[in-house]
Length: 419
Ligand code: EPZ
Image (cartoon, rainbow, N blue to C red; front, top):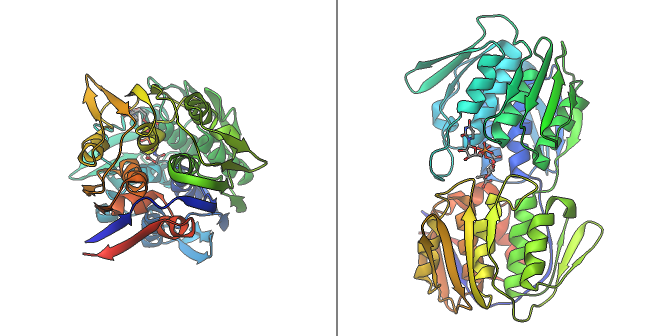
């Protein structure tokens, strides 16, 4: 089993470039099933979720060439076959194949999705949208079968009971070639949704309102090829900004879209973090004493649930007490016990995380329980005195491309070992 070893205490200095957004590319790739020509994606991150999606798409019959951070995808050979469960349940985002296959073939037989353990992660809103568009849902063992019995999907007026990134994107994908108009109300507003809408529109779709809470899709007959640049990963960016504020002595994070991080940056400013916002980068100098703050996550443009874990080690260095409440995933607290093993004064109390700082962290053997918890443990390891050994690192490698190289280049003493 591979582990990450960090000898903590080295200050970070220099420059790190943010890669393409994981939560965009995991939807962009399945959406390309709808095209009747080649689509090339640029700025694709080197993460294992992308490897899994390439494997699945290739198994389905697509031909995919990778050149640096570009993916050239020819979906014309894709067949309407049951999806291989083995690969499917390695990532939750496999549910985007439902939208792609339904939109193209009017049928999808897919293994139920997997992903990080953040508590229950239903897909009822996805299925409700597909049924509203004329698909029937049935179960065949481990797999779920969505079918329109050979008819095309029809446009529908869909109200999302909960703001859902996945359900919003999946509905947009399926509706692109449906007959007639689809309206999604109470849609999620994340930047990744705009990115998928941009790709689909450049393929010939008619999507308006992406990024607002009402999205309108006029279905079209065919979608052609195009070339698309993946937006930068705002969660990776936030993770490195938190690392730089925690133990940096002058770090520039490049390929950052500031407007995607406004709630995160204003929280850092509330702590007293000094940063310089540049054209497409953020410069974080060495920090003095910082003030403890409390935060609550909410759908975009609120504070991202994906950043509450990565920011926590920085919070542990601040002076005072604070509370962290994740209103999207109540159970997204598995990193707390691991941080406590490193000496942090942090615990879960009545559905929220409470902490008191400042803390002197000590390296320890810890385990990543999900992707962003893993990122928090890496940051804690960089800060801690002594050696931190992180296991279950596959979670981290799913969402952070070249994290060892990027941190080594900044001066960290970090490596992966085979144990
Ligand atoms: C996306 O997950 C992201 N993943 C998550 O990032 C992110 O935390 C989440 O959005 C934030 O909302 C990808 O984009 C691949 P949701 P998603 O549907 O789409 C409930 C990471 O670390 N819900 O927006 O699965 C759900 O239980 C990952 O990169 C339903 O009830 O999340 C949750 O409470 C972790 N029924 C809330 O909605 C549904 O059918 C928001 O979930 C769907 C969701």
